[in-house]
Length: 640
Image 1 (cartoon, rainbow, N blue to C red):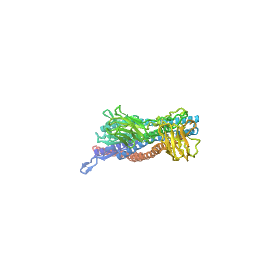
Image 2: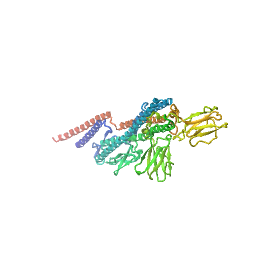
Image 3: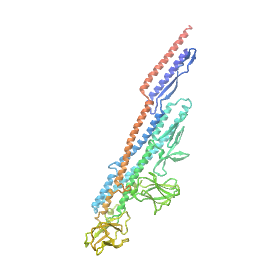
Image 4: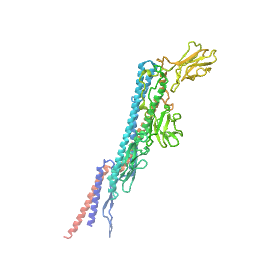
């Protein structure tokens, strides 16, 4: 009986001691990230059969278990992954939004200053200081475009650096998880069938940290290991083995860093759509969802401004009487040969209509039968079975493929507007080269007796101008007057005689258009010829200034300012959307973590109560042993 009582007392001491150890461990790790509180699980020993029935044999500690919910842990991990992606996206787009919307650093004030300078030239076309001020404001505008583009390049470099850093972190965390898998398999369930709780906590913390970088899926194995998968099921951790990720330049854009996995010594790129969630997913989403289109939108404004301004400027006349030249330089489409193409393959792309440009990139390919030009933003395409040529180009959205040497299965990426802001410059440095005047001048003969008047005339666009533009032409009404007139003069393409007169109707040839209004008299004549004294002429300057309010971009729906305003608005709206959603997701993370901690977290008040409970149990078990000892001594005393 004494041995039975002793055994029961000792089992009680051991159970109370295990409870004290576990409680002390909980208290010590109350502030340890990722720690799940532990509990001792007790069960009674197998009873002993006696003549009086089964007598108890005390208690045993079956195991020490984590208070852990895989469901809640999964909820926290998923919420944290989404929160990290939104936070990463928002932190970067917020900087971009501040740059574009800055009233002093943005494009709008510089663009307005440029057109203010142009209005000053229109008011004082012969003023050299006004012309110098215009060139200065034009240079400031080009510089502002270039500065904004440089910031975009810095954003792009920053995204590439973040991707590289994320890949390094993913590889490190994967290796640590694999190492813990090995330790758990050796020391945990596989041998003793007892959970290695602290190792499991450490691994779960690493898995949670990995989930903050990239969206993952996990599968627990029977040996206690945890396999981790990314993307569309690509294995990252298999037991104690890991798959290595690497960064590489995109085959379609060398300036873009992408992620690939190493297999058999080769790096195979992963599609960006498979790398969602976490800070890595946020960086990729920012680049593809905002940065690329925003830089293209800025480039579109620069190209549209340069081309339309040049077109009108080339219809004017400078101070020396020469036809105007290009005022700005314009970017050419960027063409990238996709990796794997024959080095001899090439295409020639050009911008045929700046007003039709979009903010998308394009792909040109040949499948062996058809040549196809595709808008990548929505996969809209045009195809032709005939090889594109200068005479019959393949065109879409103002982009024309004028020549192609390409093999079946090859493709090229075209970035028509990506470098538009980078490459815009002012090509004029002589104030006398500003074509503020119109190259033609109209006049009515002093001997005219009718009431008819002739307009100042306009040069037809687009350039190039007609070679006979400045050839003198005379319009003479018949004598006697019969409602008709004859056209005489130099140059080709003059109309036949006996032209019917309609008051106010357009009269066009030699690349110009005039209108004669009123009632002419017999013998009245009007002349159209070169503007030999255009120093104070502002007609082309007025037309250049009117470009500010014309819808020249986005298929005739946007001005320069409104196109830039659309860019600012789109980035601003997306920034606001991400601000709201990221805060909401952060709140969701806090709520799920609170739910998890209410179950798995350490409550110091509860642990303090447990200390007292186990202390009393220990003391009681000790009392049992003390009594057993006294009983044993009583038996020994019977022999004396």
